[in-house]
Each structure stands twice: as structure tokens, then as C-alpha cells.
Length: 61
Image 1 (tube, helix red, strand yellow):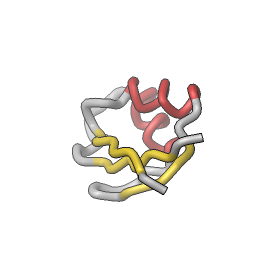
Image 2 (tube, helix red, strand yellow; image 1 turned 90 degrees about the horizontal axis):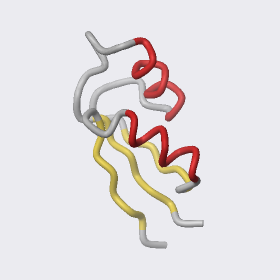
Image 3 (cartoon, rainbow, N blue to C red; image 1 turned 135 degrees about the horizontal axis):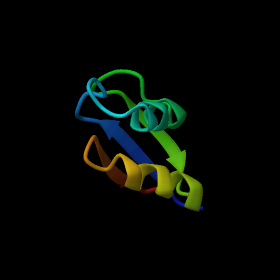
Image 4 (cartoon, rainbow, N blue to C red; image 1 turned 90 degrees about the vertical axis):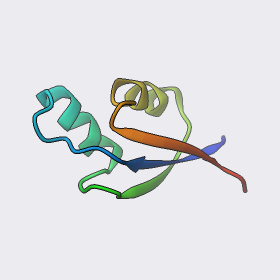
């Protein structure tokens, strides 16, 4: 499976509780935090829900 790098670029403050929990589930707790995860359908769905708060880059192995 391919890996992706997700970076939080906007704050979760003043967002819906669902979006805050999605950021937390992705492992993003602070601004400019980056996590590297497998690109599963579940992860990609979570990224779509908060795509206005994060940037996504593909990791070449």
C-alpha cells in the first residue's frame, strides 16, 4: 500500500466536533504537525472530511 504524508495547516479551533475528532484520529494534534500513514480507504475518507485543514503529499519509498 502507498504511504501519504498529512500535514495540518489550519487550526481545528472553531470547527465542528466531528472535524476535531477526525484530526485527532489521524494523529494531528498541533499546527504544522505531520504524520505518515498508509493510504487505506478509511484514511482517505477521513482526509476528505478535513481536506480544507490539511495538505497531503505522497511518499515515495
